[in-house]
Length: 116
Length: 113
Image (cartoon, rainbow over all chains, first blue to last red; front, side, top):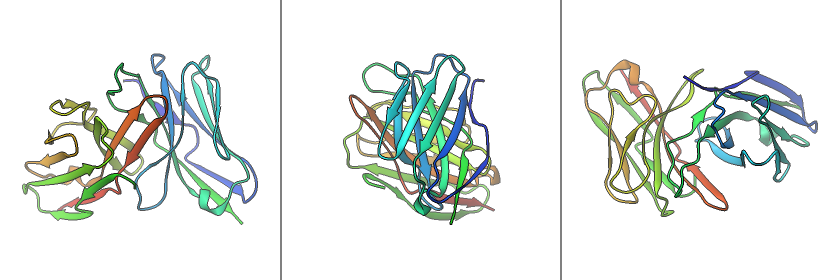
């Protein structure tokens, strides 16, 4: 079946540097993508989302880029801080009219390590 | 995590025992989900409920049943637990309108021995 995946299982960056986490998806019908952050022992936390009619969306210190041509999604975190250490997941979904949903398909995650 | 409460947080079962994982939300969302998370596997959807009174299978439904008791509550039941069901289970809610709201509970760590 189609799936969402991440290129690197672990990413190590220096505190203060920018980090980029990548995600490849294969379902061309997916029209909605979300990035989640999961800290140890906690549930995933919503970071930012993007719809397929957009190429870029910015939040606070985070930017998501979507390249539908190559089915690639990335999360950029600016000026990383120790609190950014976590596992990051991308997820995809096909939007259902009316707000219902058939569930998100998640990638396996990238562990972001912030070094002092 | 705000708005989604799961119980219990930890549970150990013997093979063949049954149990129900509870999930309740206070955010008035229509859609509720149950996921399991295993090392190296990410999160996989077990069942979901798009609205009160409806449930549908996800990617890995075998060995589980669900009940959408009302808009607030969505329970996951293991009728006869197996070691392969050792996992961390997450309940989630999501609503997509102009602004997306998506929240997960804190998780239930289940061990089947």
